[in-house]
Image 1 (cartoon, rainbow, N blue to C red):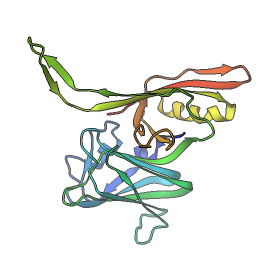
Image 2 (image 1 turned 90 degrees about the horizontal axis):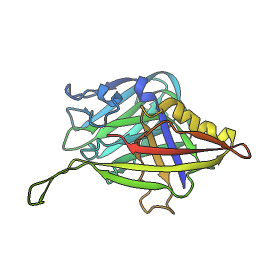
Image 3 (image 1 turned 30 degrees about the horizontal axis):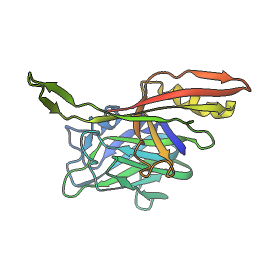
Image 4 (image 1 turned 45 degrees about the vertical axis):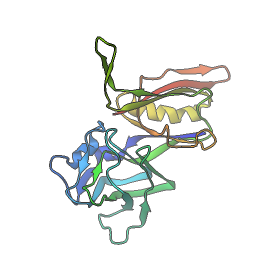
Length: 253
């Protein structure tokens, strides 16, 4: 099983321009870490241009649904270019949508260097809705990964009350994923990858997590998603100059 972490999100500092925008749900909502703050178009198709201000390194894109509603589009394509022109951009990639897990991800094999990105959405017959988007570089834990056991659970946030007969009255809301585990025997070079994520995100910024392990899960995207670290982790230097760290995540809402 390998794990990919996405923390330093270029979208947060980008200038966003949409071809169609509902004034009640503007593009600025994409920069708000709360998943319930969504962007909406006024039409059944639209595109959003992301201007990063300068040429930036990009090798990944992720999109997640709001946590309360399903993914608000039926197709999406990302394009990259050095200029804000989209007649024949050098990079164009159709994105695969996982509506069950509310998760979309594409990783380029090599780093792309461009200033602009554009994502085009279609959602016939309804307006487009987008919750959170990541564009940037990933940290891929390929040679190092979580040790056994890896703990995972889903917290149901339903509000439950009982009357004097013991009958339940349930207000269903949503669920939150949680997982935790340890990464052990890391060299000084390998632990730098974790430092990179923790230094940027701490427990106050979201970290997108993508599990890739078909031999562990039939549904590889089951645990993948939009998370926060529960606290600043403790790094331990062990005998042999190997590092270990415990990481605990709760899904962002």
